[in-house]
Length: 140
Image 1 (cartoon, one colour):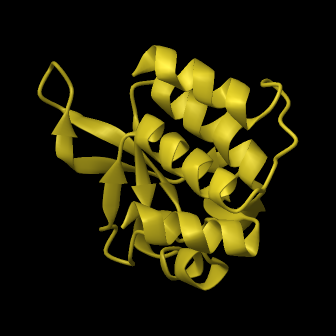
Image 2 (tube, helix red, strand yellow):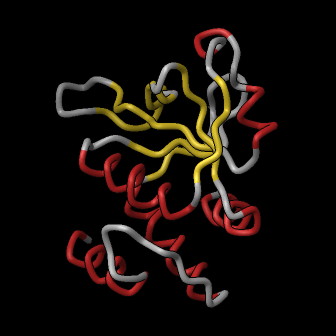
């Protein structure tokens, strides 16, 4: 579930990607198709390093987990995933299966949870969480 993922990353103050030579792990969606009826790209993220490490097999055998702060996750990853019309993969297992979510939904849920716990992030491209939330509302 998105909410469980968000609670874990807020608690740990980080999210994990797996990458190889600056190439992040991307899978094909099982749920979403492009207008050309091809699978949408899914950019994968994990709430803990051990789970991410389990996916460093077969097609991702040369990949290694890398920790990313939440602000970078939002601004540099989720916003770009939205701009590329990709989907977010959450806590995929070693069979490359997991939750697929719209990046704007993930951002929205993250903002709610951060505000609920009075956690402020130092953002580079937005003044604060309220500014991010206002920009997000324009897209929804």
